[in-house]
Length: 432
Image (tube, rainbow, N blue to C red; front, side, top):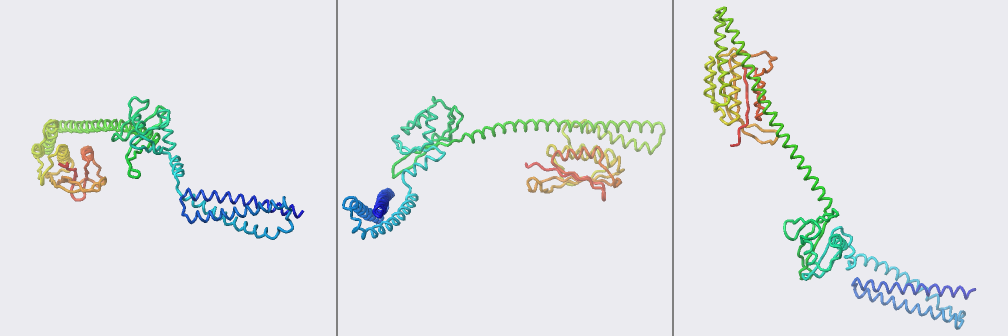
């Protein structure tokens, strides 16, 4: 029984020594591939020699058991041999762990190739003659999609990409070294070529990126932009139509009011002829002058408008007018100011019973909310010496139409009845 136990012990440690010897050989070659220092290789070599001698001793002891039956007098050396093997096993395992960690930190050619193969980008490096230096699996896959075969020559591969007769759609980039390839299966690749240097020699690099999703999003964005431009154009046309209709409506409303006033004046004239009331006669003359001013304004709507003509018409109604400052001459602004003079003159005579009207023009700077910058404006203040309206005063048709015209031109309008009846216009001046 004791012989069997000793035989099993020797056999186990002999096998374990053989395994450790194999591991030592593996560590030696791993360190050799990682270009480790010679000291490490010498230590591994020493481990190999010791393991080999211990293995020989275990084999000799096993031979003695089977051949010479030395179980009685060979017992003295076995515990020391087993102890040495246990210690050496621990050393080998520790060294193996160190070799494994070192091998993981070492970048070998195989590890670099494996890393390049995992990239989603196709890579191809080749020499000037076309000989392939390095190609990853993604570029090989792209070559099979394009031409149905692998890449054997870099120059031929690039020439085939630029061949217009190939069965794919090519979109040239900014230069001849960049292009966009759309395959028949819908895949889109951005392919670029550049020159680099390796160990002092010229090397060409070709990269291929799968931009199918980006290209799809770009095309969808173009379609949406075209639709947005169409909607914008339709809105601009609609705004112009609305503006024209609004102007026509305001003109029609003004003409209707003028004709209504003319009808009232005719009725007052008939009453004066019937009664002969002098007070009524003065009012009839005043109304006829006012209507004549408005009618002459309608007649000159299509002609060039002059401030002198308008002020002369206003003065003919018996209203004194005093002006200060330079009134605007820019197209569009002049029409608004003339309309404001007529409207205020009508209100002064008809509602305020005034006799004098004051017009003051000056340039001011107004900060706009959109740009937060100061912009040049012309400020027109029109006041009179007539009676003030009631505190619950509301704007009539003339002032309402005037406000719409001012706001449509990008200006501001304010009506003040605190001290005198004063209408203030702020109109933006053109940049030129």
